[in-house]
Length: 324
Image 1: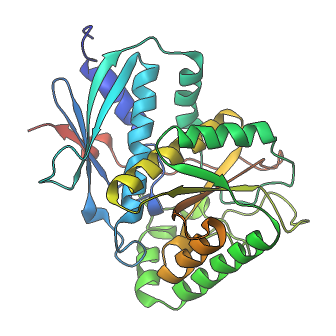
Image 2: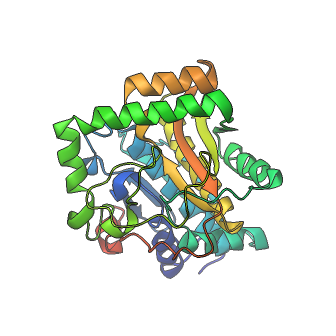
């Protein structure tokens, strides 16, 4: 390590944490290129999902989450990141160029970096134990600091209508042969080093949980109440590529901050993948004043529930190469 940029081992360690970021169907749609003093993030649109995510919105969210994971990891190793987003107008796949400035890591950053390996997408319903308001305030602030807006979705009629949007999206997807074929490709028995394995997909009648193929994970609690956990909506004022990338960074900040608190988390996107149900969420929750990008459910997991296993990742060598 020099006093001007991290050495190759440090960069590799940060990238190993970055690729632990969540992604749509665990597609891991990113490519990293490492230069002598910079690291570059590209979207791998060949890993796109034409039926689930035809406009690549969720690919950009996924890459934004990976970018934030990388920034947190680098800072915990003593390097602040200077990020140039969409640095090349002639190459829309080039999402970020990252430079480094030495910094002394703080305890909260180290805790966030540790949370990267601890975080899991827990699709089981959380318990009805109350999440402290101070925790929610911190999660919202963490997301807002990353360039998006985060709002808690209220209960009552708004939550009921949101659940109906989830049900409507699920019903539409259930009759879409292309979507179902794509889902089978990326879940259940076909998941190996990518995709959502059966052990990570919940087998339950929960309207907020996507119906993955071959699900084997069972609920850890009795469904004694209709409302479990709190729902945070990550949204943006615009719906362009920059907004979507920043929304992914904000999502990562929310997820890691929640993990530091010991909360279970689950990103939810299904009703936002279809124009009709996304418009319903936009109208009902945002009064047509913004664009919903992703919902994060946070709550306490049952103490008796087994820990959700980590989802697989491709070898780092498949996702990282030298800058040409």
